[in-house]
Length: 122
Image (cartoon, rainbow, N blue to C red):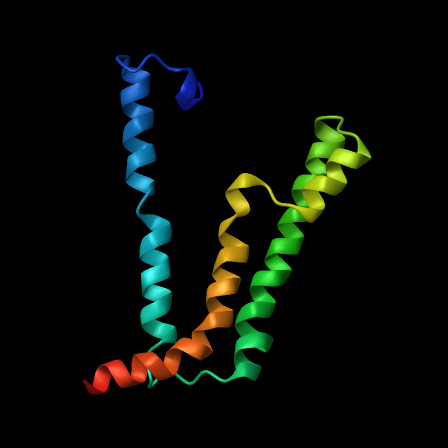
């Protein structure tokens, strides 16, 4: 199938692509809500050490691995130059925006836990 933006909006291809695109849009917000419900739960054991060693470490490692994979792909398969590849390595591919965002939310979580605990008492 052709990319979504190249389709005539009245075509069957556009309708199919729009359906699948719309169906997948709820995934990230729902995952953020579920992560918040788990991490802000006072019964969930979460220390700074566990947060950094277990949760954030996994995110940073996966982000770096995917950045390297995409930079290698861009350089070897598309014939990109080193300057552009280094910009991708420092920045991010568009669809990897989620990884730094969730890492930031995980960093803020210990600060929000006392608020969530008091909110349950009200």
